[in-house]
Image 1: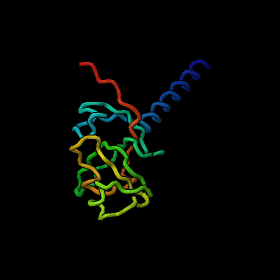
Image 2: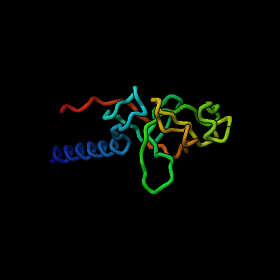
Image 3: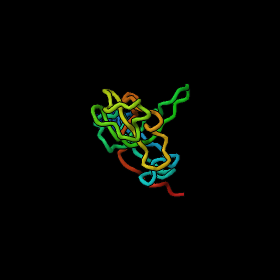
Image 4: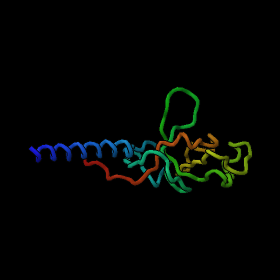
Length: 141
């Protein structure tokens, strides 16, 4: 009987661990070309939920800052954080601000035709879903 109880305890711990992982990690599929060459359309990316240690150069998944009820997630790279200088190409979208205000980020796509902070201005850090950890292998067809 004690083996059965120990086995059930191990299974419960395993299920709890799996639930914790599912809460902390998720997989997103990239659509669009704004992050080329780093990410191609169809790439799957492992994402650690909650921003945690965001740094310049990190790739984040966040809610696109646009009006309207439909929420759309986007993948972009952090170009500047609170207290950093605003990149010149973004200044027109932020009324010429020289530094990034607290709680805000400047997000840019890697591609030349990216919709990003050059159009949106600052992105609230509160809109961040998570940090891209790594690209996953493509699924076999």
